[in-house]
Image (cartoon, rainbow, N blue to C red; front, top):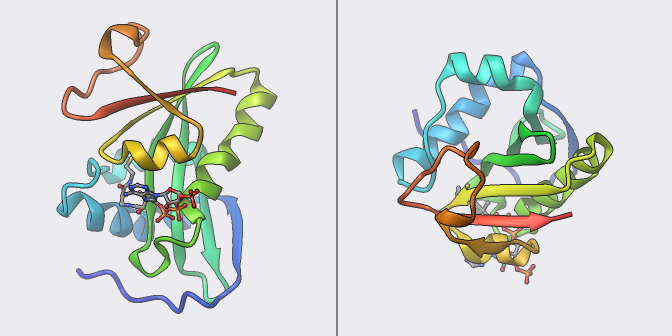
Length: 153
Ligand SMILES: CC(C)(COP(=O)(O)OP(=O)(O)OC[C@H]1O[C@@H](n2cnc3c(N)ncnc32)[C@H](O)[C@@H]1OP(=O)(O)O)[C@@H](O)C(=O)NCCC(=O)NCCS
Protein backbone atom coordinates (compact mmCIF):
# COMPACT_ATOMS: atom_id res chain seq x y z
CA UNK A 1 0.00 0.00 0.00
CA UNK A 2 1.51 3.42 -0.93
CA UNK A 3 2.29 5.85 1.87
CA UNK A 4 -0.32 8.60 2.18
CA UNK A 5 0.95 12.19 1.79
CA UNK A 6 1.00 14.24 4.99
CA UNK A 7 0.56 18.02 5.29
CA UNK A 8 4.05 19.01 6.44
CA UNK A 9 3.00 22.38 7.84
CA UNK A 10 1.62 20.67 10.96
CA UNK A 11 3.18 21.00 14.41
CA UNK A 12 5.01 17.86 15.53
CA UNK A 13 5.07 16.17 18.90
CA UNK A 14 7.88 13.83 19.99
CA UNK A 15 6.75 10.86 22.06
CA UNK A 16 7.47 7.23 22.85
CA UNK A 17 5.84 4.75 20.48
CA UNK A 18 2.97 2.54 21.61
CA UNK A 19 1.34 -0.58 20.24
CA UNK A 20 -1.24 1.48 18.33
CA UNK A 21 1.64 2.91 16.26
CA UNK A 22 2.94 -0.42 14.99
CA UNK A 23 0.95 -0.54 11.74
CA UNK A 24 1.84 3.01 10.54
CA UNK A 25 5.46 2.47 11.64
CA UNK A 26 5.62 -0.77 9.63
CA UNK A 27 4.15 1.06 6.63
CA UNK A 28 6.77 3.84 6.83
CA UNK A 29 9.66 1.39 7.30
CA UNK A 30 8.35 -0.83 4.46
CA UNK A 31 8.20 2.21 2.17
CA UNK A 32 11.94 2.77 2.58
CA UNK A 33 12.81 -0.94 2.69
CA UNK A 34 11.17 -1.43 -0.75
CA UNK A 35 13.52 1.28 -2.05
CA UNK A 36 16.58 -0.43 -0.51
CA UNK A 37 17.23 2.39 1.98
CA UNK A 38 16.84 0.26 5.11
CA UNK A 39 16.03 -3.23 6.30
CA UNK A 40 12.38 -4.20 6.64
CA UNK A 41 11.02 -4.85 10.11
CA UNK A 42 8.62 -7.64 10.94
CA UNK A 43 5.47 -7.07 12.96
CA UNK A 44 6.49 -9.48 15.72
CA UNK A 45 9.93 -7.88 16.17
CA UNK A 46 8.36 -4.43 16.33
CA UNK A 47 5.90 -5.61 18.97
CA UNK A 48 8.79 -6.93 21.06
CA UNK A 49 10.95 -3.84 20.55
CA UNK A 50 8.24 -1.18 20.74
CA UNK A 51 9.70 0.22 23.99
CA UNK A 52 12.86 1.12 22.03
CA UNK A 53 11.02 3.51 19.73
CA UNK A 54 10.26 7.21 19.56
CA UNK A 55 8.20 8.96 16.94
CA UNK A 56 7.29 12.40 15.73
CA UNK A 57 3.51 12.67 15.46
CA UNK A 58 1.55 15.29 13.53
CA UNK A 59 -1.58 17.06 14.82
CA UNK A 60 -3.72 14.68 12.73
CA UNK A 61 -1.97 11.66 14.34
CA UNK A 62 0.17 10.72 11.36
CA UNK A 63 3.78 9.63 11.84
CA UNK A 64 6.37 12.03 10.42
CA UNK A 65 9.35 9.94 11.54
CA UNK A 66 10.51 7.21 13.84
CA UNK A 67 13.71 5.87 15.39
CA UNK A 68 14.70 3.17 17.87
CA UNK A 69 17.41 2.99 20.55
CA UNK A 70 18.33 -0.63 21.14
CA UNK A 71 20.67 -1.49 24.01
CA UNK A 72 23.47 -3.86 23.00
CA UNK A 73 25.77 -3.83 26.02
CA UNK A 74 26.41 -1.95 29.27
CA UNK A 75 27.90 1.06 27.48
CA UNK A 76 26.67 0.60 23.90
CA UNK A 77 23.34 1.09 22.11
CA UNK A 78 22.31 0.96 18.47
CA UNK A 79 20.28 3.58 16.64
CA UNK A 80 17.82 1.51 14.63
CA UNK A 81 15.12 1.81 11.97
CA UNK A 82 15.42 5.56 11.45
CA UNK A 83 12.78 6.61 8.93
CA UNK A 84 11.39 10.01 8.00
CA UNK A 85 8.17 10.27 6.00
CA UNK A 86 8.97 11.55 2.45
CA UNK A 87 6.72 14.61 3.00
CA UNK A 88 9.04 15.67 5.85
CA UNK A 89 12.52 14.91 4.49
CA UNK A 90 15.08 17.69 4.63
CA UNK A 91 13.42 19.55 7.52
CA UNK A 92 15.89 18.54 10.22
CA UNK A 93 13.66 15.82 11.68
CA UNK A 94 16.07 12.93 11.15
CA UNK A 95 18.75 14.85 13.03
CA UNK A 96 16.27 15.83 15.75
CA UNK A 97 15.33 12.17 16.30
CA UNK A 98 18.92 10.90 16.31
CA UNK A 99 20.20 13.64 18.66
CA UNK A 100 17.07 13.23 20.79
CA UNK A 101 18.12 9.68 21.69
CA UNK A 102 21.25 10.92 23.43
CA UNK A 103 19.41 12.17 26.52
CA UNK A 104 17.92 8.77 27.30
CA UNK A 105 21.20 7.03 26.51
CA UNK A 106 23.11 9.29 28.93
CA UNK A 107 20.51 8.79 31.66
CA UNK A 108 21.06 5.05 31.29
CA UNK A 109 24.84 5.49 31.48
CA UNK A 110 25.35 4.50 27.86
CA UNK A 111 28.35 6.37 26.49
CA UNK A 112 28.54 5.06 22.92
CA UNK A 113 25.99 4.99 20.12
CA UNK A 114 26.24 3.03 16.97
CA UNK A 115 24.34 2.77 13.65
CA UNK A 116 24.39 0.80 10.42
CA UNK A 117 23.43 2.93 7.46
CA UNK A 118 23.54 3.59 3.74
CA UNK A 119 23.50 7.34 4.58
CA UNK A 120 26.88 7.91 6.30
CA UNK A 121 26.90 11.63 5.44
CA UNK A 122 23.64 12.14 7.33
CA UNK A 123 25.12 10.44 10.43
CA UNK A 124 28.29 12.54 10.12
CA UNK A 125 26.03 15.62 10.36
CA UNK A 126 24.79 14.15 13.64
CA UNK A 127 28.35 13.91 15.01
CA UNK A 128 29.03 10.27 14.12
CA UNK A 129 32.27 8.96 12.57
CA UNK A 130 32.65 5.99 10.30
CA UNK A 131 34.46 3.00 11.85
CA UNK A 132 35.80 -0.19 10.30
CA UNK A 133 34.22 -3.56 10.96
CA UNK A 134 37.32 -4.56 12.95
CA UNK A 135 36.70 -1.69 15.38
CA UNK A 136 33.23 -2.96 16.28
CA UNK A 137 32.67 -4.84 19.52
CA UNK A 138 31.89 -8.57 19.07
CA UNK A 139 28.38 -7.93 20.40
CA UNK A 140 27.47 -5.99 17.24
CA UNK A 141 25.76 -8.02 14.53
CA UNK A 142 27.68 -7.08 11.38
CA UNK A 143 25.83 -5.85 8.31
CA UNK A 144 28.61 -6.02 5.76
CA UNK A 145 26.85 -4.06 3.03
CA UNK A 146 26.39 -0.95 5.18
CA UNK A 147 28.49 1.80 6.74
CA UNK A 148 29.20 1.46 10.47
CA UNK A 149 28.82 4.79 12.30
CA UNK A 150 29.87 5.48 15.87
CA UNK A 151 29.58 8.35 18.37
CA UNK A 152 30.79 8.89 21.93
CA UNK A 153 28.24 10.95 23.81
C1 LIG B 1 18.22 9.68 5.92
C2 LIG B 1 17.09 10.38 6.63
C3 LIG B 1 16.85 9.75 7.99
C4 LIG B 1 17.49 11.86 6.83
O1 LIG B 1 16.45 12.53 7.53
P1 LIG B 1 16.07 14.02 7.15
O2 LIG B 1 15.07 14.50 8.15
O3 LIG B 1 15.69 14.11 5.73
O4 LIG B 1 17.48 14.76 7.36
P2 LIG B 1 17.75 16.13 8.14
O5 LIG B 1 16.93 17.20 7.52
O6 LIG B 1 17.58 15.91 9.61
O7 LIG B 1 19.27 16.35 7.81
C5 LIG B 1 20.25 16.63 8.83
C6 LIG B 1 21.54 16.96 8.15
O8 LIG B 1 21.98 15.85 7.35
C7 LIG B 1 22.10 16.23 5.99
N1 LIG B 1 21.59 15.11 5.19
C8 LIG B 1 20.36 14.56 5.25
N2 LIG B 1 20.27 13.52 4.38
C9 LIG B 1 21.48 13.44 3.78
C10 LIG B 1 22.02 12.58 2.78
N3 LIG B 1 21.28 11.60 2.23
N4 LIG B 1 23.31 12.77 2.41
C11 LIG B 1 24.05 13.76 2.96
N5 LIG B 1 23.59 14.62 3.91
C12 LIG B 1 22.33 14.44 4.31
C13 LIG B 1 21.26 17.48 5.84
O9 LIG B 1 21.71 18.28 4.78
C14 LIG B 1 21.44 18.14 7.19
O10 LIG B 1 22.67 18.81 7.23
P3 LIG B 1 22.92 20.08 8.22
O11 LIG B 1 22.77 19.58 9.63
O12 LIG B 1 24.29 20.52 7.88
O13 LIG B 1 21.85 21.07 7.86
C15 LIG B 1 15.78 10.37 5.80
O14 LIG B 1 16.01 10.93 4.54
C16 LIG B 1 15.18 8.99 5.62
O15 LIG B 1 14.34 8.55 6.39
N6 LIG B 1 15.64 8.28 4.55
C17 LIG B 1 15.14 6.96 4.23
C18 LIG B 1 15.45 5.91 5.27
C19 LIG B 1 16.91 5.91 5.67
O16 LIG B 1 17.81 6.08 4.85
N7 LIG B 1 17.14 5.74 6.98
C20 LIG B 1 18.48 5.78 7.55
C21 LIG B 1 19.12 4.47 7.42
S1 LIG B 1 19.39 3.72 8.96
